[in-house]
Amino acid sequence: MVYKVLTYTLIGIEAHLIEVEADISHGIPAFNIVGLPENTIKESKERIRSAIKNSKLPFPEHRITINLAPADIKKEGTSFDLPIAIALISSSLNISTENLRKYLIAGELSLNGEIRKIRGALSGAFLSKKINLEGVIFPEDSSSEAAYFTDISVYPVKHLLEAINFLKGEIVLEPAKPKKNIASQNPLHEIDFSDVAGQFHAKRALEIASAGKHNVLMTGPPGSGKTMMAMRIPTIMPDMTIEESLETTMIYSAGGLLSNDKPIINKRPFRSPHHTSSEIAIVGGGTNPKPGEISLAHNGVLFLDEFPEFKRPVIEALRQPLEEGVIHVSRASISVTFPANFLLVAAMNPCFCGNLGDNSKPCTCTYAEIQKYRKKISGPILDRID
Figure 1 (spheres, one colour):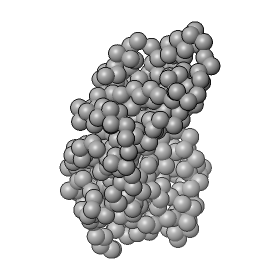
Figure 2 (cartoon, rainbow, N blue to C red):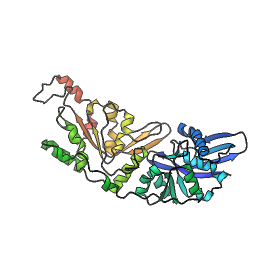
Figure 3 (cartoon, helix red, strand yellow):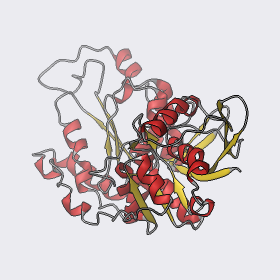
């Protein structure tokens, strides 16, 4: 008999339904996983074997075939450990197939059977709600984010045995309760725009930019306060709406950047990548594309200090997100779209030495050097800055 367990895989920030099918047959003992699994899933075989045995559960010493359907979607990540383990031992423990079809199950297993945090729990919870499941079985450390925005039952588990006993009906688990007081518990910004003394014209310009979401380029000598003011812009932006908080939290969840103490993003993000950052780090990507800095700044501020020092491809890659509010990342086998609706705040020196216009220090740059420095920022990018 083939046992099926429902789980998901992330493509971008969206969760896609995956069926884990386990077939145990007579023959030479073997453990094979098919269905376009990536290396992290292929390596999970030994983790799963150790977790089952160390939990004092029966591991079938037969020919084991695990299929991840549909087979045309590439699967990656460690969240398949728990559903594969449950599908494997369901036949030995007589777990009802009806019970298995009620829940979306995901979790990474340690060698002793403990269940670790996963990426994209919030997206998985929304998927289970969309397909009308009774609930989800997720690691305890991932349960808070999944429970906050959805009204579906999120059952937190710490150990493989706990998940098995729940599916067998031997124990009752209380669904995770959303921490509705998280917003009030989060500390206020440690810095504030009111901290800035002087700079009245610059502050006025940044206030208008924040209110109307106008992209800004600040030019001035080192020490003039460009970075200090940029860091304080999120404190004068409007509070995030529930929809904005949800979308931003899903991005951080897909990137594995949430903690159980702070499972939601309810403050405007402020991202300040270094000017040596690669194009993939800024716009997102990889073999299995993950959100980059422009997506992590979604509904917040992306601050690019020393703007001309960024690599030319990185600067030019900002054209699409500045125009459309999204970034399309295409790879050989997959194409995903990440949200990237951010306020761009860029800062630069007026010249190579930084002293142009500074009355206390003489500029040592030639006219040609100044023009060369400023031409690092192309016209199409400047057109997108207000």
